Image 1 (tube, rainbow, N blue to C red):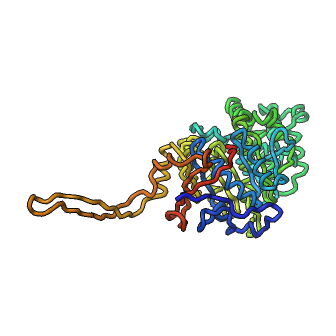
Image 2 (image 1 turned 180 degrees about the vertical axis):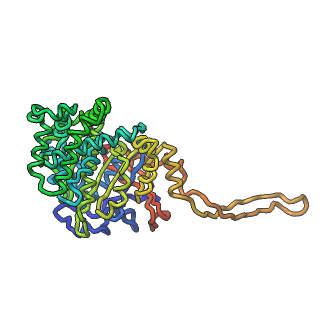
Image 3 (image 1 turned 60 degrees about the horizontal axis):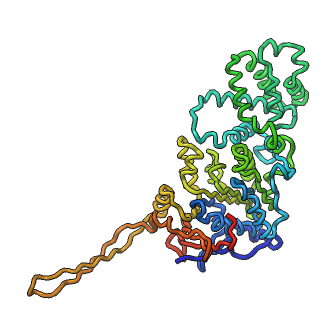
Length: 490
């Protein structure tokens, strides 16, 4: 039996209170007897469905509006060009236009992510290794999909270069940005003779930075870090490395950073810090208006930067029972995945972070992370507590859903009719009973779910939640129908 999936109370921000931020607060009602709570939302939600299946305008829209009505803050990643306008409409209808922050080349907002991480005051902020990891995470998005088997030496060498360039700027208390890293690395000496030349030392940007660091280093730890950084740039880099190795290392850095050294991305990520991920804790909804379909690879990298910084902020700030829940929203989520995704999702509930990822099929996740990281896809699929399946023609996804939902014992009845030997009586009827394990839902059924539109604008889906027994469903699954708006926007 289909049940309409409707939002619970119509909560606007003016009556949204810490009471509605309880983990047991009802976000959505699933028929008469079952509800979906903030606790359920914080355990991660994966939504699957074909293009046109209604996953965005059905389950996606209902969940998004429920979170907004409950006063959640959030970060919205945008793959499609119409996604920013969709969220403007959501916030307008929820009465929360004042909480909208659009991050785009036209908005005037800037996010120097390296400076944000350097100056982050929560525990773990400002650590050089964390800055190195953040840079590499942002620059490697979707590059790893093909899975090139790079020699570990080159990865370690690039990390060493970044570590020392970051420390030079950090110890000198100079603003940190990709442009500043490029300037420091580009000013490094190329030969031992150049490093010892007084004229070079007097004019070098690198030496000016190291000298400024020397003047302000007060602690023994900082002096040790500066000694290691100086030895790298003035001895190892020009004297120990041969020119080919040094050139390859620098080239690896510059090819990663090049897109952020020009145009809109340089302005957005290297020139200021007007908005921070932590603002979502106060109820802001930050929409990243850099759709991948328009900004391509650079749009993906820019949004993964935001996602990584937001996840770090969520993990580093204590968020107890009175904290406002926050969400991370990713339609076409395959474009934004990183290999460390499951690590965040495993502990997101403790930090009251609700992650909602929409995609067409499991194959999208495998393609995004690459064959070498198939275990990461399995971990991602396993960690999400709620999974919603819309109409789908992808056999891998449908078969996985059938296996996930599992089977059960069922009593099967068969009847038979036999004729007796002539003269010994009429036909004999027999009934046989047997118990067999059968699937609760067959993979072929997912292709028959309704996709919305006229005449009834219903989007059908199967919702699975591990560890749940729905009173109005079948164990841990419930078949539901989402009421789609008459003029669907996606």
